[in-house]
Image (cartoon, rainbow, N blue to C red; front, side, top):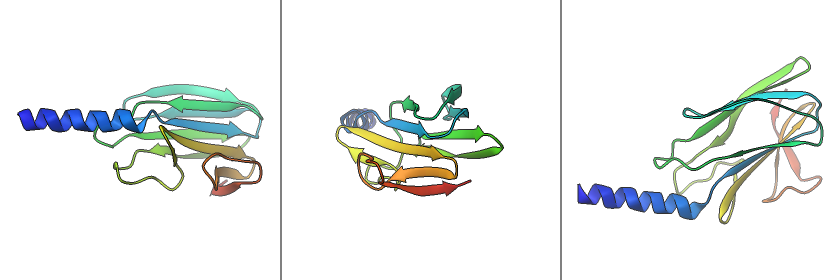
Amino acid sequence: MHLMRMLLATMMMLIVLRGRPVVHIQTEVNNLRFHCHSKDDDLGNGTRNAGEEYQIRFCLDVFGRLLFTCHFNWESKQREFYVYHQAPLTRTQPYCVRVWPNLECYWRVENDGFYIPQIFVPQPGDWVKRYWI
């Protein structure tokens, strides 16, 4: 039992040291409607217009199983996907970038799809398409 408590305490400390992730969803379309949720948290519905950003801030799951899904729609277009998938402590998902002490994930919504940055902090012209509409 003592070993289990020590293991759990170590895992919690690693999670705290890794920082608190933030998912940034920037939009270049008007009237972007979305609904985001994880298994434990329903963030409800939201709407953003071109030039605005929505942020999701959360604590990591001790067991590394945190998934945040968002369903997006505007005009007659819609798409649903994981905007954040917590990987084991030794891996990073290809669309999430480690910036100590936080994990920053950036998404950009354009009329033809969803984009991610090529580098740690997105700069103009550094976006590549991840999902098509």
